[in-house]
Amino acid sequence: MIRVMLVDDQAVVRAGFRVILEQAGDIEVVAEALSGSSAVQLARRTSPDVICMDIRMPGGDGLAATRQIVADAPGAPPSVLVVTTFDLDEYVFGALESGASGFILKDCEPEDLVDAIRQLAAGQGLVDQAVTRRVIAEFARRKPAPASNPAAARQLTAREIEIVQLLTQGLSNVEIAATLFIETSTVKSHLGRVMAKIGARDRLQTVVWAYQNGVVPR
Image (tube, rainbow, N blue to C red; front, side, top):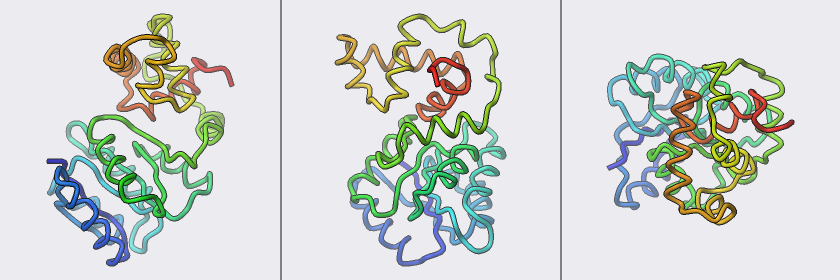
């Protein structure tokens, strides 16, 4: 079962999400919080796999809470899926900078929310399709940072670089495999090695890293 915590100041939103997620069969809602500060405390106590985090809440915003949850985790931090009504670039930048693994809008279809949680639980970060490649590229341009391992880019093989470049275009593993005429499992293996080399947690952080470190031309 995928353990999920819901963070939103609106009780009706949390209730709706709980119904949607628990109908999925493989997802369990283990905690609910109505503010960023309470989310930090509950995350420590319940150790969820995925946190559905609202951004704007009284008593502590979701971005600050995300940053603290990721920083405080003793081991691998939970994946944070930012779920919001706001699709402005600045909120996307804030979510990425805070360490979120995914970003999706509240008006998404129920199945999209379920799929997003499953993807994050499997270690695959994502951005809502409405959030374009331009947003990630602009985030990387505004927030330049050195690689966690400066030599990592030079350690990537030609095939790994090719796969990362396709990943930055928003392609799924299946689409990358079809483009390169290789097996989907091969793509997954390559991406796993890439993430290990560069110290990225998931696909989304890999895309940001690629822009920040010149693997993808700007």
